[in-house]
Structure formats: structure tokens, C-alpha cells
Length: 605
Image 1 (cartoon, rainbow, N blue to C red):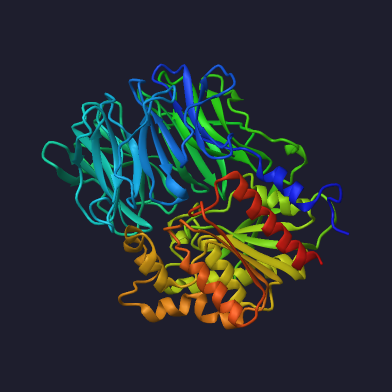
Image 2: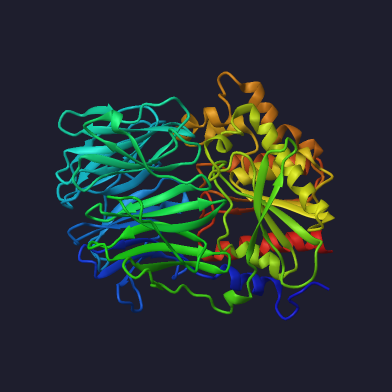
């Protein structure tokens, strides 16, 4: 009999899916309050609380799902990014810290708008939008009082404002030419001229660009001269003065934040998916201090105005996502928010263990194994592939994983070639025709688990979302005898229809990653699972959001229609109020319940 007999499957899953989340910390300019996004009410909204700690107060109750919040540097407004219907057509509003005075700044409709930040005087907001050209994300500034809109950049690709000088005369703009390669430009607002700061031989990435406190240099993350991304500094008066400030051979720099005086930096190092936090004095860059933290994942770093506190989003396999505050002097961290965990004891959850193995061509691979508390290996096992494809599986709390584990089903989350976090060479190993090797990594992963007595043959499932949904359908089609069941969450199955129907700006930057539909149509057909669904025999569950404009719902419809025509067992769940992913609590519960029930039926029965 299956474990967890005391609770029904739905009740067990409900407890896991109702575990809350907090993210996007934002200090008030006096450092006394903290705004953040939480799904405490069932849908992601803005909340705020005093920094010393207290029960949080709700700021927004939008119909839309909130994705991000930034506090004005003068304290009078909060800038809020939200997603109507859960789609990618995110919009930007401002509200007072007490929730009043809501005003939408963007045009709405189908435009995509990415919140960049405030000008230093709080008079305007910086953002990116494709309101003028659907296939191009350009940078804009909008005055808060008058609503006057000013375009800052003109150019193909996807551009974002990374930082601005205090007087608003210059901006740092990141522009993605194609996925895996970008540049940073210095934009003069008066002349609208652009100066390329990051000349290089592609591919290379330049991320998180920030002006130094004196405005004479730029700090950024780059892999221009290294395989592993590192912290670099570029003097603006001397392009030849490019300098690697801090680097590691065993880890990539995932994120960094500068204190207000640029004396101190907080660095997050990615070590095979787990994070290490380091505080560094930039004048010497030799006195780094690694901080012991309770969670394996650290993100969204924000220094308080005086630099004495560092806010961060922290999580781990057994640590649900919350906001934590670090005392930068003592190195002590305390939990600022406490998301609901009703009926769930994190100490009883499964931890993640790193496994390393080899692909068919001896390429080193790795992934995170979650083993059930009850029973012994070999286990019924689900392979779970991340999105991206430049994403990365990391040891963070996943309610769907823990719900499967509670039923005695193990989860292995691999990082196939093309995943980020392992260096420039590795992330580009699935571009174009190299994707055939990435598909072969699916079989190599299953073979390693079987050969090492972890997974039980004939009881292996596969699932994934977005690009992970692509890998799911590719695995079911390429290796039909290997999998007993599959779950495809909003995955790409036909690259040609993806290019035709996705956001135009997304299509324009994806041609190197996947293949150019104008010149490599045969390759895209060969890589698309839709043309191999006649090989699929495993029962397949398909879940999608009706408002998904990244991977449009037509991708799901093609799978369902093709499998039904062949009488392959397929079930289809469409969420009318979700986009690319499921954020609303009731939908998370429904999706997780369906996924767990599906694998119980076909891996345990």
C-alpha cells in the first residue's frame, strides 16, 4: 500500500501547495520599513512591515498577480509590476505605501513592460517595453507627476536599464542580441548617444551592471575572459582598464549588490546549483567573508540605505522561500517574514543531495536527488527537467517534489547540457544541432539512476515546465520504453509554431539557441517532438495556462490532439487565469494534485 494513508492525496498535496512564499525585498529610504511580494492572501501581492519585525500589512489587492516591487528613493511611492491574467504582458503601477493612489503608468493591452528602477531623485521610473515595436524591448523613462514619456534607447534586441547616475544624465543599458550573448552600453540622456562598454568576441554575458558610488567606473558580472562568470570592474575613462575583481574556478558569480558607498559588495556564488554568500570590501577585494546561512539558495540582494543590513530572499529544499535580514557587521541572519507552513514540518521534508555522473559522450553532468523518507531504493522515480533552457535545477523548496516524496516517489532533478551555472562552454552546448546531445542526456540520466540502484526500472516518470516540458516530450518520444508516464507543463513541442506565436521579442533573441526558422527549418523540424509523437506510448498529462504568451497554448493543443488521435492515454488541464506558470494558490493545488495522482497511478499501481 502507498505511504501517507492518514491523509488523502489531495489533502496532503494541499498542505504542501499552500506553503507560502515571499520575494522582492525593497527597503524604504529611511531603512525603517521593508516592502515585499507575498502570496499570503492566495495571490501574489505587495506587503510591508517594520524592519524590526511585526505582522505585515497588505498594500495591494490587485486582480493581477504582482511580480515585483521597488520603493521610491524619496519614500512617497511604491512601483509595482504585475501580470494581468498571469501573462507576460506585465504592467507597471504606482501606489502609496498605504495602498492608496494607485495609478497605472503603462499602456496595458498586450504590451510587455519590465520594471527597471527609479531615478535617484524619485521623479521618474525607468522601464523596458515593446509598446512601439513588438519584436524589440526598448528603454523608457516616465515622469511620475506629469506622465511624460521619453524613449531612452533605439535598437534591436531586448534592452533593460541596469542603473542610472544620480543626476539622471547617464544610464547603463543591457541589450541582449541573442540568448547567451549581450552587451552593456553607456547612454547619454542629453544626446541620446550610446557608447559600447563591452566589446567582445561572442558569446559572452554582461549582467547586473552598476555604477560605482563616484560614477567613475562600472561593476558587473561577466564571463568575457573566463569560463566561469566573475565580478569585473571597468573604469569609464579607460576601456583598457577592465579588471577581474573577484573570481572562482569552482563557481560562477550569480548575483551581487553594492552598498551605497560602494565600499562593500555582497556576492552570491553558484556552486553546482547551491549558493554561497560572500561579503567583500572592494578596496582590497582580499578580505572576503563567507557567511553561514540556513538556506542553500540566496537571491534578490538589497543593502539597506546605511549598509548595515542586507535583505535577501532565501530558500532551501526544506526551507520555504522567505525574506531574511543579515547584519553585515556581525554576519548574523534573522528571518524577517514567516510565510504560512500550516501542517507542514520542514524538518520532516526531504533534503536534496548532489549527484555527479557522465553523459553518453563522457561530459560531466550533475543533478539533485530527493529521496523519500520511507522505503528503500530502488524507488519509483520522476526525472524533473528545468525550464530555460538556460535555467538550473537548484536545491530549493518545491511543493510538487515534496508532495511526490510523501507518496514514496523519488525525484531526480538533472542539469543537462545547456544549463546555466556551470560556465560559458557548458551553457552553450545545446545550441542549434547540439540539442540532440542534450536530448541524449535524458537517457544517460535514467541509466545512471538505474545502474546505481536509485531508480526502479519500469517505474520511471518524466516531467518539466516550459523548456522542461520540451525535454519531457522529447524524452517520451525518443525513449518510449524508458518512461512509464509523463507530465508536460506548458512546454514547447513545435519550434516552428513557437516562433510564429510566441512574443516577437522572444522569437528574435532565440534563433541562435534553437535555430533560425528562416534558414534552419529542417533542423527545427528534426528537433521538434511534435513530429515524433507517433512513438509516444506513456500516459501523458498536459497542463497549461490560457494566457501564456511565452509558450502559447497552441503547443499544448498540438500534443493533446496528436496523442488522442492515436488513442494514447492523455489528460489535459487548462487554467483560464494563468500564464507561463501557476501562481494562484488554488491553481497550484489543482496542478500539484493532478501531477501527484498521475504518477501514483502509473508508477505505483
